[in-house]
Image (cartoon, rainbow, N blue to C red; front, side, top):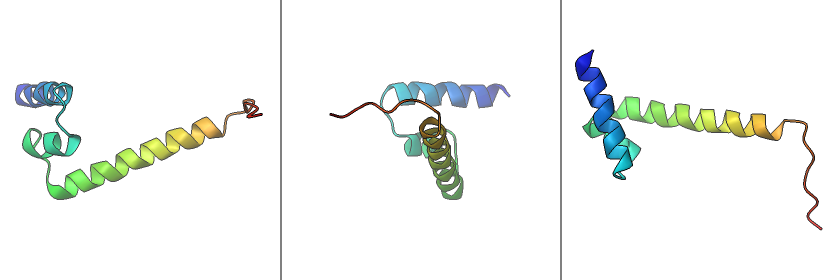
Length: 65
């Protein structure tokens, strides 16, 4: 378990230093190409769900005129 927490700490430091998520996943966390692709799909789905939820709330739309 300690090794896992060290990997995630290193990943957080790499992200703060500007390293891309794919590079972190591959080089620090040891994800396979399939795992990286699946994670990218999962992240895209989460963003779509968040956007859909935001747009479906009953809130007034700003007048552009």
